[in-house]
Image (cartoon, rainbow, N blue to C red; front, side):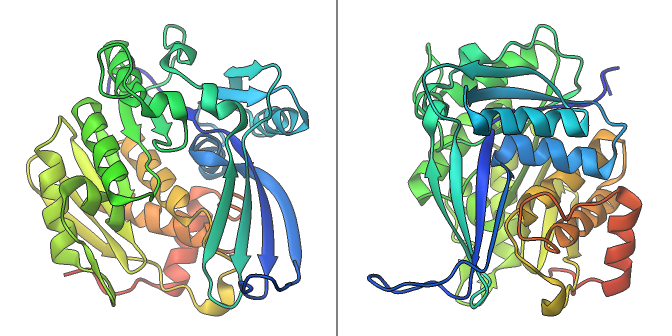
Length: 340
């Protein structure tokens, strides 16, 4: 540890308009919205609020861009409510706060997002000033959702790489969140950023894209290939820990090659309201444990426990609870078999 404490959660800050529907309709037909909820969304706000729900005493800072509109004020209000330092959130006039229409299908259990970037298209490395932060970690995302950041920047492969490089130069440890777009884009963003990462927590598809390895088949994740992809990722940068999660469990590798694995929480279907935010919950649990100096096995336990807690609600963060409650939930339901 370097004497710092807390997390700077940066990048995508948006509003999620969560709409639960019975099933996804065919085109030219109608379906009902059975539940509607406006909540925070995006990797920046999800991580920030999940961490505060896990431990309200943890210092958390926000950084990114929002619009001068009602949605922007809503996000600032969420920061105030959770005690998140919003000084790094820049309000840009003349544009809208990013938002996503998030449809959760009760029939399939799957979710579909329609994203409107608004002022997120203007986000650039110039919006990240690390000179005043007291945080230990920078959590950054989402490559693929910000036009300027996705492009080369002043000699660096992407704006993401430039931002991560600048953060490490200021003494922050770095973590990246990705989004599951097409394989070539995920691979490009991942390989751009890995030389500047201390920690990487992604899903099985994303790590497979980065490594150029197919990690799934019709039955789901293939643990052996997930591990192979993680080992490739370790060769692409200075990361001390790389983790891939999937519905059945997670696998983690440390820089010395040590392997850790744990099955996910065996949540019954009747206890699951939605999976939108489970990945964020897992990443928050992992990052919290790593920040607190926990060993990898205990951090994996909290990652799965936080993900399970998040699935109790449709929105991304409202189900996450204090650390002890999340761990108790995991103990109640138990874990699936450890990935081989």
